[in-house]
Length: 183
Image 1 (cartoon, rainbow, N blue to C red):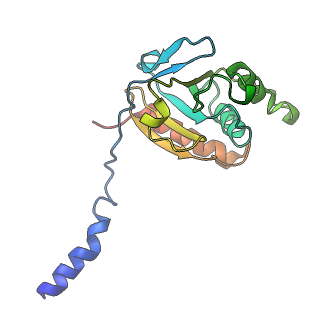
Image 2: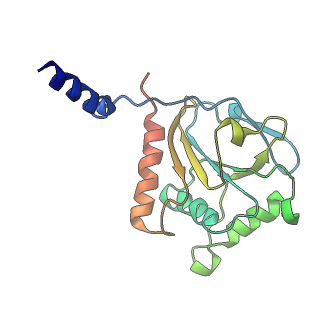
């Protein structure tokens, strides 16, 4: 009987916590990113509001452009901080403003003609925010609540462009950021 009990404990140990509702949310570290003029943008710029951080790269087109437009389609006027993981101010000759223009032009042939009101920035090489956040590759979106806690991390694409299931998924992540974490 004792062996059976020990075997059951060993087999069920990995399931501990799987049925509860407690989620551990981590605080987004203090960060500094740079806009095209070299001005610093920090997490204090977003104090008290929910927002999304999209880690991308200035050379990334689709699926990165796709994700940025889907964010806006799912929640119009969503607050988004786009952070290039490139340390160079103009990798392959692409500046932040050129990158922002290419993102905005992405959907022009789809007749939606969105202009995204997002802050396009890049990491500061003296304090690489992408590294601090454990970002291994561009194409990661982080939903942050108004207290500065990471509520959801999406690696890669959310889904198809302007697809209702994709938009609903993004909206659910945004709503979790609006709801915030439980202390």
